[in-house]
Length: 170
Image 1 (cartoon, rainbow, N blue to C red):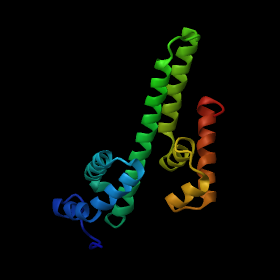
Image 2: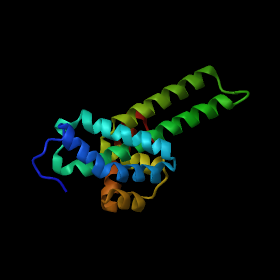
Image 3: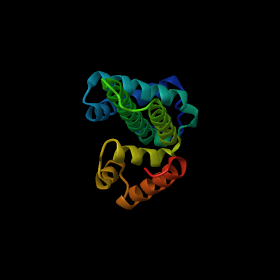
Image 4: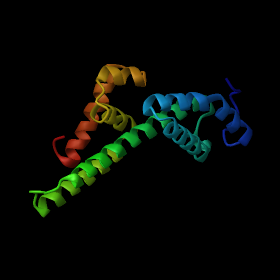
């Protein structure tokens, strides 16, 4: 779509990239979030991240880069919403039969789980969150990421090995 040797850090080039892909990114994020305002916010965050990393992005791979950013931002938001929901559920309990020690251990476990998920390599984290949080089947993940089911299985297996090593059986 563009000449090969353009520098993304130049404002004119960045503006052309924005005009070329902003609507597609917004549509992609709206499809994921079902919330136009959230899709707009995430789209802006995608282009901010592109601008902040413009010197590290290959011009010929900018489209796949921004769609990867968009997908990862969505997955991070889903993970965050899940944590918020779990937090709200825990605090809505009117009376708790759990000991303070148990509550502390549970909190520490959740923190360790989040830190471990965040530390996973990006491709493994993406597959792990899509399967465990979004409840997608391997085939759906493979289609969405445009990879084979075997690749999804391998990434999930590697993620689970890391998770088990860090926090025990998942």
